[in-house]
Image (cartoon, rainbow over all chains, first blue to last red; front, side, top):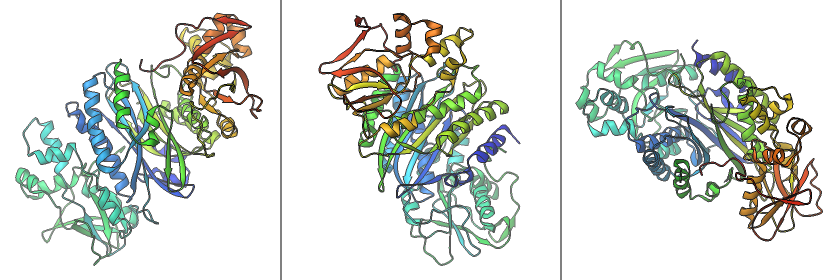
Amino acid sequence: MTGESAFLSLLRAGAADPAARGLMDDVAVLDVGGARLIVTSDTLVESVHFLPGDPPETIGWKLAAVNLSDLAAKGAKPVACLMNYALSGDAAWDAAFLSGLQEALDRYGMPLVGGDTVAMPAGAPRSFSLTAIGEATSEVIPARSGAQAGDILYVTGPVGDAGAGLTVLQAGRDAPAALIESYRRPRPRVREGGTLVSAVHAMMDISDGLLIDTARMAQASGLAAVIEHIPVSTELAGLAGGGIGALLAAATAGDDYELLFALPDGVDPLVAAIRVGRFEAGEGLTLFLDGASVPLPPALGYEHGT
Amino acid sequence: MTGESAFLSLLRAGAADPAARGLMDDVAVLDVGGARLIVTSDTLVESVHFLPGDPPETIGWKLAAVNLSDLAAKGAKPVACLMNYALSGDAAWDAAFLSGLQEALDRYGMPLVGGDTVAMPAGAPRSFSLTAIGEATSEVIPARSGAQAGDILYVTGPVGDAGAGLTVLQAGRDAPAALIESYRRPRPRVREGGTLVSAVHAMMDISDGLLIDTARMAQASGLAAVIEHIPVSTELAGLAGGGIGALLAAATAGDDYELLFALPDGVDPLVAAIRVGRFEAGEGLTLFLDGASVPLPPALGYEHGT
């Protein structure tokens, strides 16, 4: 067990409150005086979650977007957020960060209402946290655990663009702007989540990769999942081709921030969505592409703390 | 203007939502579906807000306590919190931190329900944020701006112990345990805040020093304040004596986390409290100790970003 997973075990032991959902979900659900709140918090660290050379306005955008995506997966309406900001020591950089953050907050209607600004010792990596507060819009809050045998699995858009954008940037190569934009300015599916919330059996955002997040949904639901289609964008297909290797890279890359959801067969998703597979009795994940069984890659996606 | 104050000006310009209170208050007030929430967030950074050699369990305690103190100043009932934790790379240190945090959360009834745990690049300073969510217990949320001419100014306990504890630790000297404990394990006045909330005209916690925080309350209320008494503990008096210099040090040290509040003359505070001064028409802060006017020290307390 790594330091992170050992620490998370300790955290979970302490977080006995039912609102914490055992810290196994991406959000907490709080009932306060007649309101049902969805709260979530994410931290971005330089060289861990973003590249030192990323434009600061895109890091600000991303800090808002990753938290909004967690709200979207619960169909929650954004209410407000608080930010913990470590000054970078470069006023222009900080101002650009803030403009990107504000742009995302304005677009998705989540005002910044508080937080804390600190000066870090010289040489410290940049590090920013945002805590988002949303309001539930449905009686039942979707979890990753509700899928049923026979359900169809959908995503709200193609996968792999962000991962390809990051790979290309790390290699210092040119790439279609759309891929870099997907990495730097993910679009949280807030509207789609609000529409889907009362129909889905299970829902989560794809932050670590289509395969691993599908495997997690299957495991949490006590079912087997079959992936029958890996949707990629025209831009990604143009860059990487449409071979099995490229598709598996797209399905394991992470940072997509599309919604992954399970709907009963025959139910219209009511939002733009792509069918990628189905759930059945059993356990585990199977890949079945173009009518043929495909072995799973050794890593299904990005794994935290393991 | 420093980088921090320039950044705060930009932040405030963006935070137009009334819930943000112009980011001039220590908390935000959110009305969500019939509930009135008090939310606040504080970050502690190694070598900035705590000493590298401080016992980890006391840093965990302090992270909870400083946020609980902000809720206390609004008379809010703690509901839940989220933590952003940067792993230290030392599992025993992390576990000890968590035990101190959990002890404070248990004592004040604020369950940990979520957050984010990240691994920082090697050599990064330790840094931790906590976002606390409370529920308002009164119709009017006390601010620092409500004091009225003729009001009496009180604190819930003596000042300067934490500052003296820090000074002694930094000098590597021995000190009464009570002073070190005040620095390392401040006691947020949650119960007192809940009792005071419906009676006070103005209330805040003393995080930066009695003098500067009184001056801020006076300025926000458009009044003059007169400090007539600087209460110090027996332990501090024993260490530093009771001379004017020692009293001024105690009143400018900060980190006290006592509540400072204004009550109409003749109204019983209903909690253990010490009268320290009064408000009158005019502006500015005056010191009047033992019947004599005392010049203000050059620095009234700890100032952020100026």
